[in-house]
Length: 117
Image 1 (cartoon, rainbow, N blue to C red):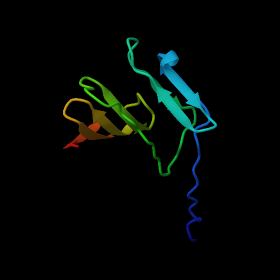
Image 2: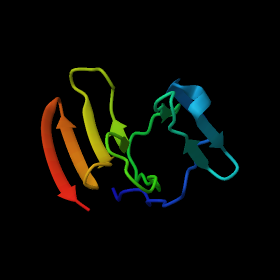
Image 3: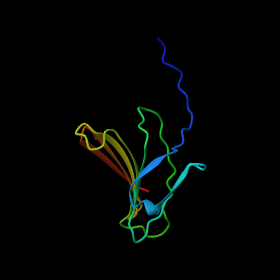
């Protein structure tokens, strides 16, 4: 039996959950954008309220200009967060030295790659 046809459609995130510092996040479903403000309150974390089995995921991350030492801007995909069999892929953008790093966790086994931008 042939595989079903693959559809490449954008599925915007219509609903998000903000785990901490919700006052630092602004979500606009109409433009499919999320703005996070970093200030004295610290950062924030948001996530989709929907689970995805597979697909292609994309994001546009704009890091602030200037000295961002000590800040970590990232996106990560995770299965069963907190479970011992968790799989995870991280894309991190570190302020000091303009480094980007990827981490892959497969059942808690870690592989890391660092690249200077």
